[in-house]
Image (cartoon, rainbow, N blue to C red; front, side, top):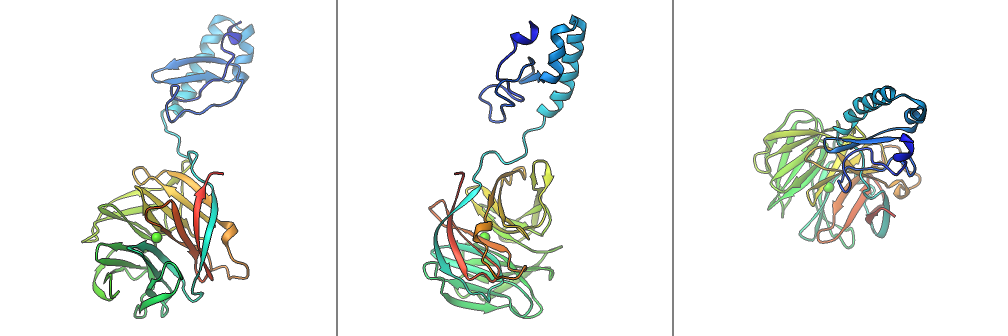
Length: 310
Ligand SMILES: [Ca+2]
């Protein structure tokens, strides 16, 4: 009788219509109630005996369930929340297989690419329609180039373990000044009035776009677990997209709390017959569209893509 009264579709967390709600089943049989702004249920494994239990037994089960479930309900869901998971290829461009891609950004109709490795690092200006390298400057040894991002008439270029960020003139690509930072440099992008930088860990660092001074960090998590090896970054529409080193995934991150809100599988783009070092790395939003340019280290192709959930 008691169980029958609550036979229905029930929510695990939150009230109806709240964004953090999720259905836990179509036909859960159990006891339901409300505590604060949250609904709770007693799963059927607990509720089944309730039809034969005394009233005090039912109360005990309800209290136990509230204790267990309220803890879960006070923590917002941390995993991807229905974002895109797949990639749709819209076109291709040739890519220099000598480019060990560490940074990719499209700004003002120009595609900028930073490359790595000691003695091979460079910053390049590419034609986004043909992939042709129009201009290139090389980093002196032993600097190992990493992520890049455009800030007005300048471009920042990170180095891996050299502790130096190089500020360059956007037109000539020539070095203007250097600043130092602690730790490693991996990916970089500009999110409005700040820079976002990765260092191969699960942590993103926010920096002033002019002084490069650090003013905060956030730890990136998916399903509650830190996502390490964050590499090349792209800031767009208040979100941060990141390549995950040694994977074929890009993740979308809410920089306000570090939560991963989407994970896209790009394994289908990986070229055949490339070494293990030729990983997916390089993501550039195409301004004014929902498209991206993506590539990998020493890949022969830059792909113009759209991320979809279909
Ligand atoms: Ca980028």
